[in-house]
Length: 436
Image (cartoon, rainbow, N blue to C red; front, side, top):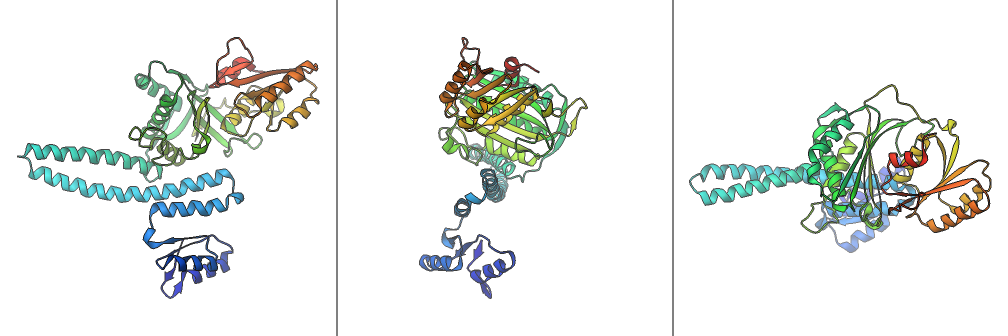
């Protein structure tokens, strides 16, 4: 961002000096001159955009940043764009929250003075107390904004996350509707993470509330230990040990057109007044500040899936890396890239399978003709070209190839043993595929 007038030099001159040193950089011009003149200078000076000072605000700054980023999308991965976008929103949210906090402090101070001076006026006191309660609600909203922007202090402690979640669910089970089935599948290994207990509890609560509101009747809470080395590095994570918290529901799912906005502050798909849109941003902020990563995937009429990865502080010695070289059987997995397919592939490997992922059915079909031993074919009903995949499977079986097939489905089919109903858990995969 470059101001037009900067003392002895113009923004255009400063930008040229910067580019001589660091090369090509994107820049946005800020000026108070006429719109026509700004447009001319923007074009001649090689600026990527401009902002009129009379329209300068956090919103217009963010909007201009996003427009510049959009022009450079082909140079960055989708993940980089998303993280940079969230970082920009985070910075502006933090600034707004701090300003709002100063305003709240002034209001609180004046209300306290009024309260002392109006002790003998019950009606006025009631109004003052009502205003004080409103300020407290505003402070809670502000706290969530600060959490999202990573400017709220954490007080991390070493905890066993599986025991913490189990205890939390036991105390919170009454908040869920009677028709909602809550399934908790904790990982078998004893692990310890360093997290702020209050914020971790809020994180779990927000994920569960989100699933409860969307649920078609079942919520899966699953935890696991993810151990990654250089040979099996995946899931968008660095080498190391991670605790995974997964929350999945079988609700209506979220449209892809808005899926990348769910972590933005105040964005909500609920009715106006029902939800302030700060729950998921708070989760995002907590995970980032805890050194972890959050993943999300949703499919219409199937459900939504949240994945939270938090670094493990201490892992018992019986943990082990997945040994891909010992795999005896092969799975051909037809699926697009995403959190669910990455997680499922990791679990297949843990069960002893060699997993080959295919996004192109033509490539999958050509590889089928080369198989020498029994191979299992896996896909999901919401996958594009699923029915063509099924035709290829039937054709392969008819030609005498040693293949079995399973598919993940959004509905329960008790008469079909090859159909595995959503949400797919570690236990359901173990039941169908066994441990080699």
